[in-house]
Image 1: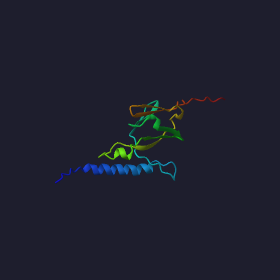
Image 2: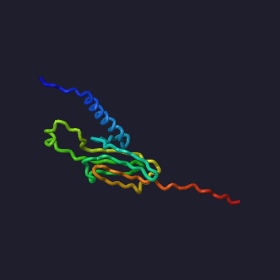
Image 3: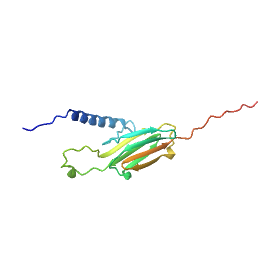
Image 4: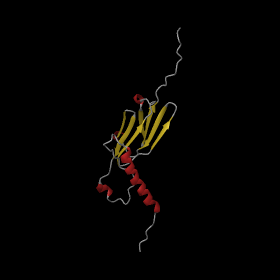
Length: 146
């Protein structure tokens, strides 16, 4: 007789992953007619400092040359691809949990973001995008002449 180990959380984890895929395909629309599909979503932290916004994305196994960062109309788009092994290489695996394929994330930036000075660096599978804030114009008192 074979013993089957019951793991109740596996079913919930699988359902969550499937729901994430469904919602991700609807969340990232370029316009009303097209849907951008992603195979996985990198984990992202967004932080605001006094001088800038910092987006930190975990993209392990992705080469910097395979990542595209674009800024258009106040929306920062992060996309790329983690190379997928061939089906022949994957056939002996019993379990595959690591993300593979294309990814796509979009972030709407506030008006205070300075799109001209955005910078990015990649270290050990972590992408850091720094979005400086624009210089604030100080209010000035206007004298009334009589």
